[in-house]
Structure formats: C-alpha cells, structure tokens
Length: 258
Image (cartoon, rainbow, N blue to C red):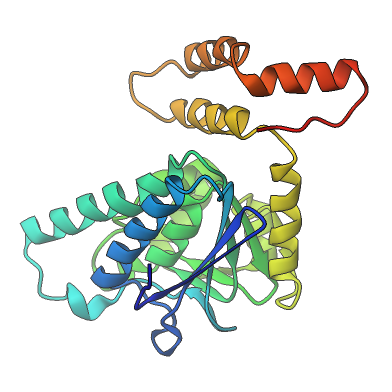
C-alpha cells in the first residue's frame, strides 16, 4: 500500500513508519490521521511485523502538532467528533496495539504530536527534541488523550503546569519527568530505537501482547488490572511460547519463539 503522507519500510520483522510532511513539520491533518489508522491496521494483520518504530521525516520535527487550519472554524459538535474519531482510530488504537510501538521523537513533538508519541508504548528522543501541549494558548485543550496520558506519565502537578503554561520542555527534562525513556543524539536516535526493538524481538510476542493488555487494563474504568494480569498469566501456560521458553530455560538453550 502506498501513502501520501507516510513512509513505511519493513525489515527483519520491524516496521518503520514515518510521518512524511516535512514542509508542514509533519503536522497531523485529517488525511494523515486516516493514513495512520490504515497503516497500523495493515501492520496488525501482517504476521511478518512484530514491532513498529514510529517517527517523523526530517531533522526538525516528529510531529509539530495538528493542522490548525483544518478545524479553526469547527462547531462544538464537529470538535467533539474530531477528538472522538481521532482517539478511536489512531491514539487509543496505538496505545492498545497488540505489537510494541516505539516512538522515536526527533525534534518538535507538540500538541497532537506529543499525544501521538504518548500513545506509543516506549519513547526515545533526540537531544534536540522539544515537547509540549500548547493547546490552551489557542483557547482549547488537548483532545487526543493528552489530559489523560500526560498525568499518567509525569504526574498530575507537572501535567497541569505543562498544559496550563502551554510551554515546551527539552529532551533531558522530558527524561527526568519520565515522559521519555532515553535521550540520544539525532544521528543515533534510530539506532537506539532499533536496538531496543531488537531486545524486544528476542522475547515472546504472545507474552508481550498479553502484557500490553494487562498494563493498559489499569487505566480502564471498572476494570481490575490485577484480575486481568492473573487471567493473562494463567492463559500464558497454554501457549506454545510458554512451552518453548520454559523448555529452553531448563535445557540451558536460547528459546526460538514462533
């Protein structure tokens, strides 16, 4: 499948998906959001792909925000629909994706761009990265999960400060806050993302899928995350990967997961 606003390459079980609108600093418009949904849907069904690295084209921006020109004249109902559809088709879809998603944040990750990075399971950043949620400076609030995921990652107080001031933080501050896992140079960013992904691929895809679901269960209203973990733990005993992993361990061999 070809895309107008994305680049997709697949190699050694890893898909690299780039938002490719460099002249717009990779800003998210409706077409890009739709293509992101289509791309992730195809990657979910692709048995060759076991992990995804999500990044932006160029050296300036991961995603510099949403394309404001598209919604500047929206009504209340259109605004609600914009947020609901975006969360359902992309942001929540990525957060609950059954394969690990690593965001490689190069440059600006602002507004919807930071929300996109926060939807990923792991974030690494280049040392020139700048992150923030500037929506209140436009008279609106984050609408793609920013008010929910940011406090989970950095704590309520810091989330309030970032949202209320509409300011940006640098990569090292983001690391200290727990917003990103690692910081490296821009030249080494993709290499680091590939290295982390390579470590993930040594392990059971069946177990990782269950772990993603169990971790996310803690954030769902009315769901007992501990109960979800217990169920997933028990069900793992019936998988081929459990048999392979335990036998390899007992035989002092490296497991060969299916």
